[in-house]
Length: 286
Image 1 (tube, rainbow, N blue to C red):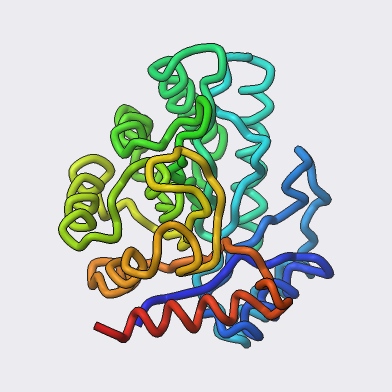
Image 2 (cartoon, one colour; image 1 turned 90 degrees about the horizontal axis):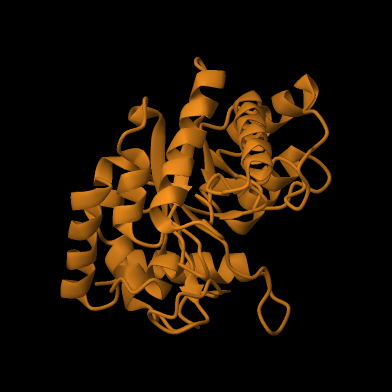
């Protein structure tokens, strides 16, 4: 059976996210370790870390993961912003490590006023400097594929490959694949032959062994739109078949998958519960 969970709020304490995940029926949980719209966050106390780890163990919520701030842009051509982004990413990794979280998902960045190759090179340099700053840190960066909106990088698997290729320590970087982003970027997931072709492309570029997490989201926007808008499972443009294909793929049975869909439906019901039920049904139905 697939390992399924959701992004949960840490309002009231890190352990509250774990409790919310357990209540919704999750196997795993994703969190922000601080306010996502701010560069800095309050230091994590030892007590907070201990309570979070204990709650995860007691409630059997495994595979915790964190998501870095959307403010971070490791591809920025502006030296000041790129330096600020590198410092912020290093702190994200340290905070996650303190909580016992093995991976931090981050959007690679946007090249803005430069160009694609310059932006990709800036990301490589940024990650190399972060690794040099934190040589012994066990928590790793997961680069997330994007929908390709604007000048966002990472929407093509080849771009992710180029970001990782040439790193001084490539084994310290993995990837997180977002289904909505892949669909919006023009990767076929519904048609079975198309799905297999997409996975083959992913393997030939990034390598399936680098996939450490999935964000499992439907899309409000059409195929190839290059727009990032998440929708409830089966209620968007993707339909159900992409999720059936993914959930029944034995190659990903041990890779945790996290919902980032709206928290309530139109009637105010807990949408995580509904989406998880849908996904588990797809996982077990031919």
